[in-house]
Image (cartoon, rainbow, N blue to C red; front, top):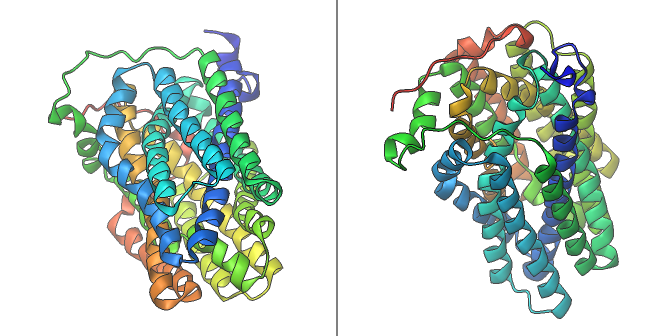
Length: 417
């Protein structure tokens, strides 16, 4: 065992993890730049809250279409190559957005088509990234690695929107080209990581193989509860799609203000992630997860009712910090209770539940905002999140009783074919 792989070694001394950490910064930063620019550009073109929601829907559809195939690919092919291919597709999207903006031929329909392609990329990238991380560090330090990885993600979610909004205000084409450059850097770092090939029997692409991840989650209430709690919380309380409306029409700020609003939750999440990487949650982790989701709902409601830009930023800050508690607990429970040969398929389903709930939540928010207004849409979502917390505490008592994350051991149970 290499010295950097010893459980007592800090994860900051693990070169494979460090490359992974910086790759996450560049990949997430690119995605956040694209999100800010596309959101502002669509609202500028159409002035429609529903169209902002459709941006999320067109990213959600490919996630549903490809979730099973993406999980199979992560479990049966070289994970580094899968990630690189997905990032190449995202780079193509960024390049096309840059060219279309520079020459003025980008339309609403073209943006939706490119966003769909970006969703295809994310459908393959996210589960493969999550399946890769447990193989880079010892199980004993996985909770810290998850928190540190999340801190990279949140650091990029802070800098990405702010940088994207600033660059868009200067030159939209420059913003898209920067996103392209970030994806190139991420792909290069992934290529440098020593990722062992998945030990696979090369099972034929049958329905029993594709649905194995769904079957595994269904038979493990602890994993099902953790994933579905986050799904419904983000589905109901997600307000990201409506931030261009709040930035332009409520707080009277431009693209820079939009970037700051998108960055605020990430600042809170980053501070919480750094805190949890240094001081893990300790005992009663399940209860703390539910408390974090409840605070997330309350902060969403407070944001909806705020009329001051600084107060709105503070609400989003608290929202992001509370959400990070849930993220760390969930992303530790799932891999530690899933055998390595199943992690790709399980993480694909988890990404559909969790990652793409952001896009479906954006569509929900946009559709409700078109019918009832942006403030009502966000307020109703926050109330719904509190109801979900109360219901899930009754439906999944196993999750509520989770104690220490660092005491968990990997499961060797294999799902039936």
